[in-house]
Amino acid sequence: MIVKDLYHDCLLYEISQLAHCIHHLLTEKKISLNDDVSTVDFDQADHQKVAELVQNNVLGFRKIKNYSLKKNQKDFVFIFAASEQEAIHFYRETFHQHPLNCHENWLDFNFYRGNDVITFRDLIKEFNSFPAIAGYSFRY
Image (cartoon, rainbow, N blue to C red; front, side, top):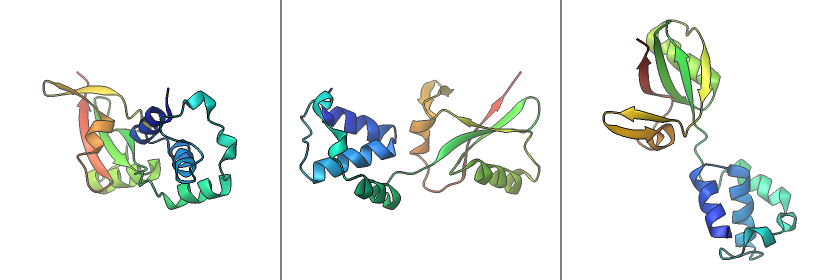
């Protein structure tokens, strides 16, 4: 695998620390996009600078997760939020009740929307502000 492919995957799957490290090494010209990843020495990165890049979020990652909140035995609400506490607060404000539970979901989970298969990672791109209701699920 080459650096370009790894960097692309890090950006796609929001692997912040590694993406910022690659960004730093590219900026410092210590690696190139066409280098084989197996030959890259990540120890040559200035880890203090990488930590600052991550803290300043120079690559613009949105640290939004997907939470499933249980309304009752059959009904669930999916909420995009930055934290579990934010998802629960948004749920309480929206539905005027406490959820029975709250669990973080995998963003790459496939589900049907109409006749199409989509992931939460794809769906999140359709939202501009958070927290937000991503959808509902019902058990029969």
